Length: 366
Image 1 (tube, rainbow, N blue to C red):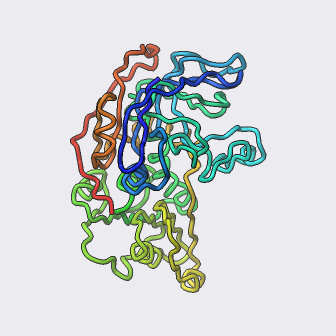
Image 2: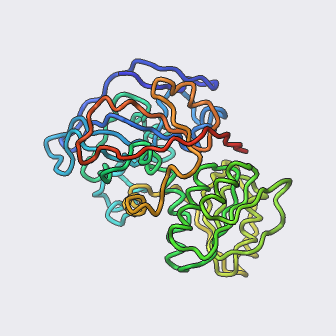
């Protein structure tokens, strides 16, 4: 089968690779229909975060094409979301619903699709077929009437934005939210959209990129363009989200968290960062930093999407044809989705009823 492969040195190419097979009676084969580019994917290619070669793409919406004999809840033809992290559903971690810490599937950065050996070499989204273990647990059925392009990012980035604010808004209903952006272009906007959908009293969005600021304003946020160094602090909020990816941005966000508030870091820091723990201790700040546990949160995200309260395509989204994936993958965009022509018929109850093509946009990643 064909797979889009990162070769190293900022090079991508289509390769013929061995077609996966059903590895167990509990596994399934999925044909990716739409694959979204994660905010980390550009850095993976341009900065060489993980050595190639490996197949790219881990935000997958696809169609089941085969299932093992023991799979009970999915059938060929079903439209599904594939969580980007692998989990078994039965180990102690999974029983405690910490699926991202699954002890059955391990890898240097956590078992994941689309990260090559660092993620355990489990295959990738920009390919003809993806093998999915523990299909009854891992695969999540797509609600009827939602296009694959709107579903793909739910595998990771949409859900990452959701978890950045959802738990904190449960603890502080109607609280105000501050999102400081610049390093994660789509996750920061998904967090903004989710905070509005979940009833935050106010949502402020700060970013260097004018188009993303405009997009946040169109979602209903109080959005401002940030220039120059990050200030020492901004007007405080009870819930803050750091998507800056810079030490001074993180420091500003932490100082802008109201006493006994919560700051969630969705930005990834690859080098040590100095944090004033005494200040945080004195003000009673809760900090949360982790990968999103996609399998745990996706059902909650789908409920918001199904009701129309959250629309993943409401942020600037570039949709590229499958055959142009190699070129599109290297082109900046707030959110990129590579979509295959629906040459495999979808079940009538899952035929997508809408699809929005937003104008292309530059991501301006720092």
